Length: 164
Ligand SMILES: [Zn+2]
Image (tube, rainbow, N blue to C red; front, side, top):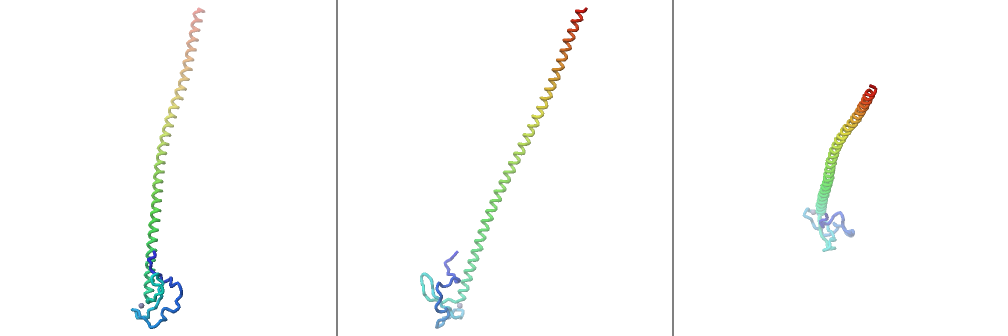
């Protein structure tokens, strides 16, 4: 973020012993004002006196401020884009999970349907078996009755023959 430019707002590390404008003879700036005299605190030329218009300060400060604001806007946009990507990915994952769940649900419904069908078939088979069993019992009792009748008739006939 820092472009190495000096920040006017930071100011000099120690206060000026003489005010920037209290020097003689005056050096005039291009803007026809007396140029303030400053002391350099740069690494290369510490203590060097130099002149710089206070309007230059102002424009440099504004330039720095604009650049900082631009960087801040870019940073916020980047963060927003990242956040959007995050949210979209999360939504995508949720959607996929939802679809998978729906498929699973459908499968389970189909399975349930098949199980119900099988259960109905078993039920039918059971009913058929129950009917056969009850029919079988009826048949057996009828045949038993018939055999009793036949035996009775035979005995009656034999008794009749003997009596006669
Ligand atoms: Zn000036």
